[in-house]
Length: 283
Image 1 (cartoon, rainbow, N blue to C red):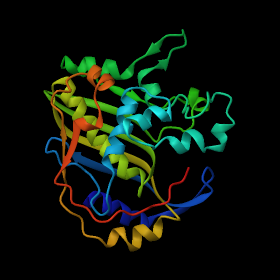
Image 2 (spheres, rainbow, N blue to C red):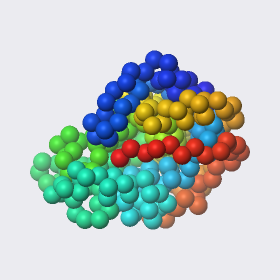
Image 3 (cartoon, helix red, strand yellow):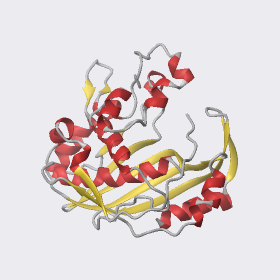
């Protein structure tokens, strides 16, 4: 929590106002933020200065792992995070590649599980990583990338958290996640949960111990209509200790994650939090 609150205060103290053309709003912005999560100690980085809806964050990332491209599939998992981008984004609604209601196009998990090759084949990036790490192999290229500039026009949104690099030292697994842009009041609340979850679940299904997860954000910002709530409400609250994330030990493979796993297989314990804060969301 200290890392998160320090970043929020840094944006308020040092940020520059930048106009965002996509949303038509101004953002108070800083460049370069680094956060570290101790996954091995199970210090789950769930925001405590307001209620955080961790189930939706994990459901979204589970959808990425499965390579989903439809907001309805994400809703079935337990999250509505893609409803607006799939159905309310004017540019995407007019895009000839959009296949209909709830279609997201070739974004995030689609690239991670089904990266198109020039010869018509595909690359399953995630399966390669799981296979290597399960054998104790780190070829210094255990990289999962959702960032495919050649297909930006075929999706409703460029990926924000776009690349995840795994590193194996002995039997301890580390993760470095890169994010080009982050809405700190809303997005970071989700993204830090997802970085932690990704390392913890990958360590479990590959038979390794989780170590540290490193989260690098390039452009960290607070929208103009979020600033007052962050400055005058959330930053005035005292944080609580970190909760813990418990994962069903029967989850042992990528196939398990692809088939039968639900949100009931995850539990957060010892979570104390303040009242929710309804931050505006920008599509």
